[in-house]
Image 1 (tube, helix red, strand yellow):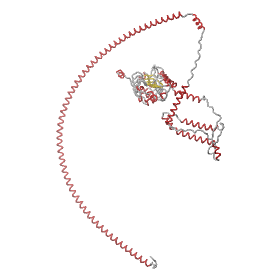
Image 2 (cartoon, helix red, strand yellow):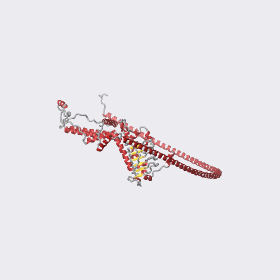
Image 3 (cartoon, one colour):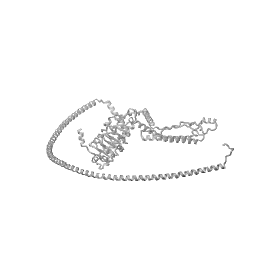
Image 4 (tube, helix red, strand yellow):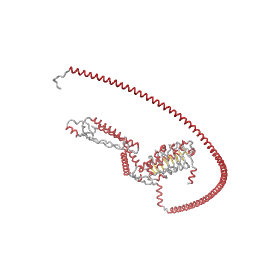
Length: 635
């Protein structure tokens, strides 16, 4: 812990000069260094005690960035380096990776090394799902790699990932509940690949190593991925079929079509209708070839259009939207098929024929069920293809017959000589040579051991001498430091004594000032009390005078207001009496006028009534004279 704190005290900032001294340009000359950071394509800043990446963002052309074994905690400065292909962050202090926006900007990143860091949860690395072309990733020796189901979560969150922690991704990790043979299993030795080679070199060598890793990942997947094998077979079959290399199915020359008349033409008689409904006609392919070709062509075009419109369901939003919009396309295709059928019925004439067959199926689109069905069908197809692949074992290659060795004249002569000469003396000589070689080897080993022991003793003596010299140097340094510490302590004591004296003097001055300020405060308080008493008495006398003046003025005002109110009451009383007298006179005159008006009206009414009575009497008298009543009439 102490060593870690000591290292942190000497952490280095990533400066522009440091980048230029450890960077490389695109050229092949390694002696000349780049002077412009924007031209640097590779930088190797490993084991330099870096604490940040402030100036790395100025390297806009950077492709290979090696920052291993440092003290880096954030990498947000790399967002401007959009051309990075390989990023090595092994052995740093990274606990949280940037978000999706950061990784989306690094569209060319293919190799990312994050092992031996401090990521502990999936939330720390969930931004990696935005990296579009990330191919290989290392996260071993991190707290996250110790959790269960770790590979499954990482692989299914980063869709472009092909290799994780020195093992290529297998189909068993992508497709759930799929049991594969042993050599296709997850973490099998066939999928092992060293994603972090130890050798480091110049820019061209690093790029060759990156391409080699990517090509090896693709090769392993192409050989040990059942899905890619099946796709390769299907593409080959379709290519051969398109080139005409697949044999065609033979067609029959004659065929029979069961037809019946349209109900529009059956209007003559009941017997003719029964005959027409049960009529079956045998015809040759030449007579109806043109009509049938048109019908088959129209149906094939409609089926091709349907197949083109139907896209396989996926777990994406875009494909689900397309699947929702397929209902309108199916209804449109059905309407076109009905129109084509009516057209061909009109073309055949009034006595039209109808082909007996099944009606075209129109399926209603249900996105969830179609997705599940397509996944089940895809799994069944893959499993059946794998079983077929395992059942069709290739025949073992036939080994060529071994050829007899060539025998020349010298070999024949040596065979004849060896057949007549004894080999015992040669064996004794060979044994003696072997014993001598063994003795010499033992002697050489003894000399080497003695020499190594002498070197070891000399090294031990040298080590003891170095230790003694270092111990003496350390003791001298310690004595010197002790003397310096004692001198510093003496200076510190003297400075503390001076400070104490100064503090005491300041305290005495402070007490004197405090005493003087207390006496001044007491004098001010006494003066303020006297001044307050005098001001209170003056104010009280002034208040009394103002109150007496106010009372006199109030009494004068009350007397004047009473006199004015009395005069006003008298005036009001006189006005009221005058008003009452005038009202009485007005009432008398109005009563007299009313009485006279009523009297004149009454007399006028009486006169009119008398005149009316007189006129009625006169009219009755005339009627009696002119129209006498007959005697013989009854009532």
